[in-house]
Length: 173
Image 1 (tube, helix red, strand yellow):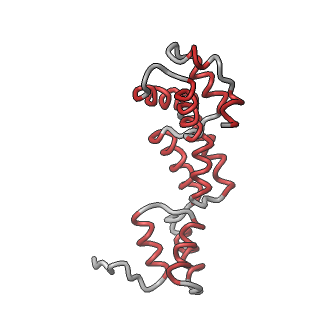
Image 2 (cartoon, one colour):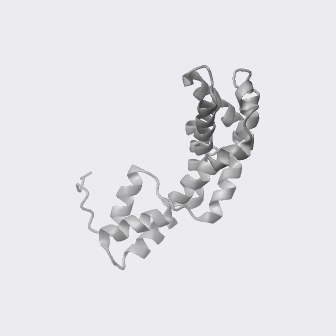
C-alpha cells in the first residue's frame, strides 16, 4: 500500500483519504475538496460516490457526534446543536440525533455530572461572582439557565448564594 503524501490526484481519492482520518459532513467535505481542487467538475461525482459507498453519511455522523459530545464531553443539548451546525451537518438530522442522544443520557444527568466536576475545582467560600462564573460555564456547555439554577439550588454548599440569583440574572450577564 503506497502513501501518496497528501498529493491525491483526484477528488475521490482525496475525499477518501480525508475520511480515513476523521468523519466529515457532506457539506464540510465538499468545502474541503473545493478548497483543494477549486472548480473541478469531478467533485460532485466524488461526493455522490462516497455517499453511495456509505463513507459519507450526515445522519450517522450527527447521531455519533451527538452521542459522543453528550457522553464524553458532558455537553448539553444547546452546545451539541451548535457543534453539529458548525460541522455543517444537514439540519434535518440534527434534532433527531439530539433526541436520541439525550434519551440515552438525559441532559439533567449530564448537568449533574458537569456540576459535580466543576465543584471539585471551585474555591470556597462561594461568592456571588464565583456562582455567576460557575453558572455561565455550565451555560457555555449547553445547559439551560433554569435547569442550572435548579441543580445549583439543590446543592447545600451553593444554596445560600444561589437563593439570591434568578435564572434571568444569568441571561443578562
